[in-house]
Length: 554
Image (cartoon, rainbow, N blue to C red; front, side):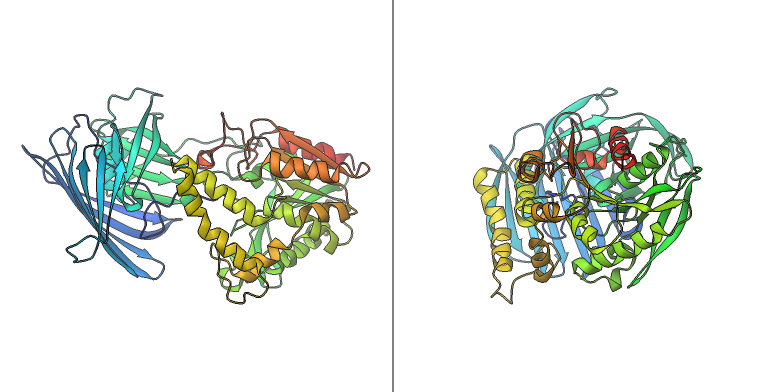
């Protein structure tokens, strides 16, 4: 299952970033009348720009800026006017939103116990609604897409020592909410600004299940770069350039992205050719081979999630144990215009082509081909095993056992709880999606709505998948793996339920869980929230070793 981000900062634009400012303690100010340009990109594609200016007087500071974005459906513009007292406390904040289907003005003013947000139709004199937000100091006003807010915030962090952490509250007028957050200082470094070298300080904000990495000039805290890994969002100050990164070692002790054993190939599916990577370790005899099937959503061959590549880690770990792998871009990633919203188009057809290709690859034993699925790929792997003759076995990594709507609603509620929502607010938030799935489950409802971008017909297919039954009915050996800290596919409600219902099926089904591992089978300190998906890491080596032990015994 694709990780779901419960936070969507930006009521108008579906959320792409944090942005920040304004608290309570005295704050160093940018130069009077300073003007700055920031460039926003998503996945390397231009998203837009922000033009910001700060004016400083004896009465305080005024930040004005305009963000211009290209979004689905057209162009959007956000303009702001933020006024602060000399000590940094809020006087007023006005945000104008001009986006397809939404023209609003939000006016935020301080109150005795927080702030009040008035929501106006554009040009209107009377608010459509006024909502209070209770928030205590220290707080930071942090709205969507405004790097200039973050610039004001990083300038306040000069007293945060190396490795230090600080808790605070985010005040987010666009979603009319205050959210708990933590900022941590990371390693210092160097970069260039306008062609001149500068010393830098790095910070990471963690809020609910999202992380955001900030790079600032060490001398005054001026913001240089923002990265939101899970959203593939980058914001860069004009004139900034990163210093060359040192070579990094990967899971398989090779330089990142450069394993000489890997060969670029294509999986020729019915809709077209899918880029793939074939990794066959050199051995005297043909080796077992594994086709990797990723979770839901338009995943690439490595199942890249933020800075992490779990399938690359697993493939290289298995190769170290003498096992070949084939991993490929999903059709929804490589051939978006040809990708239909059906399980056959998303999984079954291309999986069959990949199994055939791996079995025919030199150095691979065609009698020992396995399928490994992760998350939704694991849910569908038993069906794929029944559709393709000659497979030796299946590996199911974090298969969801509950109905898909139950898991989605559980994730949404979990994410809302992380943001500090009350039980009543969570119930209200999840009611809509519960009603939508109730309509999808009703076979008489031809008008059932699309949910999360997928049509009702797709969800009906997925709801019809009964993982427990398909594991029971399968004739193949199956290994089921689970991370104890997985908050998407849960050990108590999914893994344990499958284990108690199916058992070992006469020795055909084996189970193994891993302490302190999350949904990506990466180690997490304490409880998983999903925020760690945005932090670079690697699949725990014990996982591919457990898979290899099981495969090599067959």
